[in-house]
Image (cartoon, rainbow, N blue to C red; front, side, top):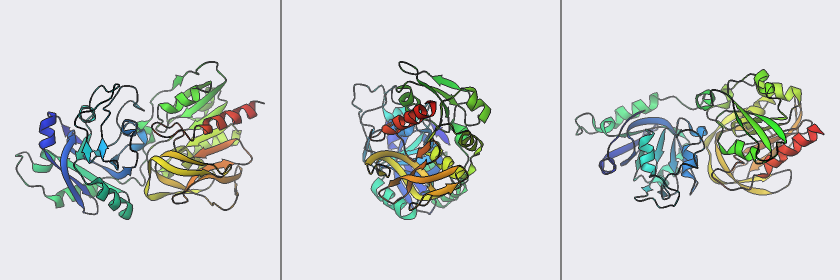
Length: 389
């Protein structure tokens, strides 16, 4: 990614182009930093929560297209980031807010993108772009503005064939091992809120800040460990339970040593998103890349253990390949699909019948998003209570 900074008025006047790897392009105006960037083009259907989306480490190396037309209305505050920085590699919006308005706002979204060097584009027909990605699938993309588009002279017309060639040289998401790039480098502790009841070792594969907070609200002291932690380091915390977080990249690249070690010891285990995929692989199921993934805060999922339908927050481009119609025998006991997406029957959760282990493919911490899935943290607490008893 290469960027430059200019005044807002200067940036808004600059042409920009988005080039997809299949050759289709969309022209618009520079938004955020000026320059060039590459990544996987995906779309998010959330009408709000853009600040949480931008700072979700699971979006590392992805260019996010927002399907809601108006973005940036509430500006940017200092309370809602889910991690230490913006992780998206590029940002695509239709109509950015000219003047943000919210009592918590500290600066505009445009200024925040510039400050963090995130290249974006506005004025794009995001409806047409989203329909294209739904039909053709998520694919590599580049955004170009300023000298990256016009050359140093500022007048040379863009050679889209050359831009397309550069897009096709960018790495694909399949086979990408990215968790260690976004995870903490050293262990840190989030103390329990109120009386401490349990200790949980959380493996940071790209964890969002609200997740350990939701656990802490339930009297859990959370030890957040790097993605490269060993099984001995996990158990050095004396955990009552182990948590596997969300994260970016292809789950087929991840090491399963910790997951298998926890399963062998029988410690209560709760995984979400990337963690769900790692659990699925450890149980012997495969994973595969979805055509365009699930991203946004309005995905309907059914909990098959209760029949309840919940609206959930998603960000995943891969899924677990497990049978929906039967209980499976695994090296660690029986397992079944516990949750399923009602849009396309994608596996959205697993649970073991002989061990205190379960996982879901979505974000129960609800940042940003609906709170229908908050019960999953309570289910984890119940497993730890049962194990202690």
